[in-house]
Length: 124
Image (cartoon, rainbow, N blue to C red; front, side, top):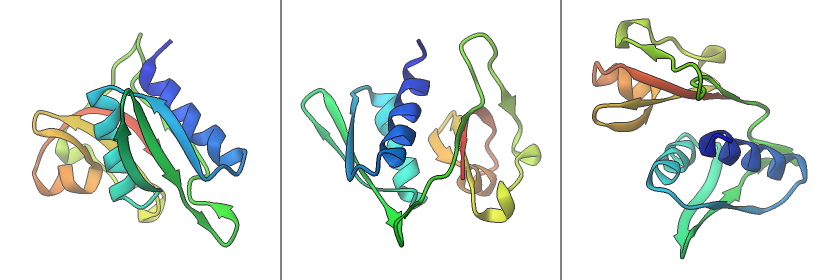
């Protein structure tokens, strides 16, 4: 199974189960993705503890901050985009996470830095 998709499903299922915190197996790439999700205020604090990534989940008046996570690039089909083709998701309420040559970042940061790359996932 795809480890990135596994991480995204763990976070989504944590929200559905109304948990306060979830743990994800550690890798550098997953930690960078989790930090971008935290920077976009979809999850709370992200911390590395031993071989785990601890992700605090945020709720807004009892409802989860994330309603959907959609994996775009998959193991069998990678999806790449140029910076000029990056568009806002859900009128700015969602975020697209892109792996660029300068690291993992949200679509707004990639557009500012004029960078394209592999589209990892979309969150709203």
